Image 1 (cartoon, rainbow, N blue to C red):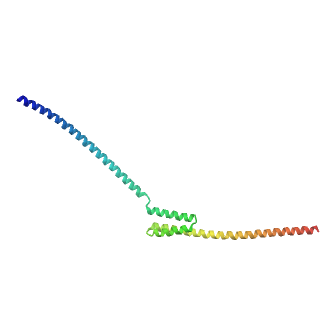
Image 2: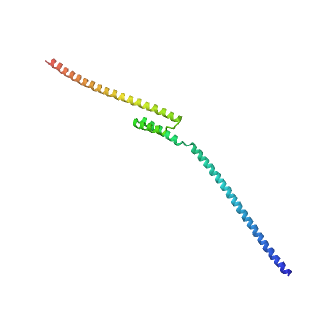
Length: 172
């Protein structure tokens, strides 16, 4: 019986060693899994921080971009300048009427733009006035030139007639 007990004890000790080895192997694999999970978590945290920094950078870039109000103001100024440059008073008036409705709430910048618009409108009217005066002057000068050419033609014809008469008198 002692031999049987010793044999059973040895087999149980062998089984115990196997189980201890399996436990060690399992503990090592669990540790590896924990390390891998921790590395993955750290990697995810780094990625998260990088994305947050990217978001902050994009927010900063967006804050530096012109706003809708800036865009509308610049668009309005360009339309006014184009209307003045191409001498389109109807377009200028329409831009002015549009802008009055859209920009009633604008602050100091709006008043500066309004002054610019008023200056440009005054300049446009002044140029229109000068253009009209110049056209009128051109028309009167053209009429005067026609009269002078007619007088010149008449005078040349008279000179030719008189020369013919003088020649006729000399021949007699």
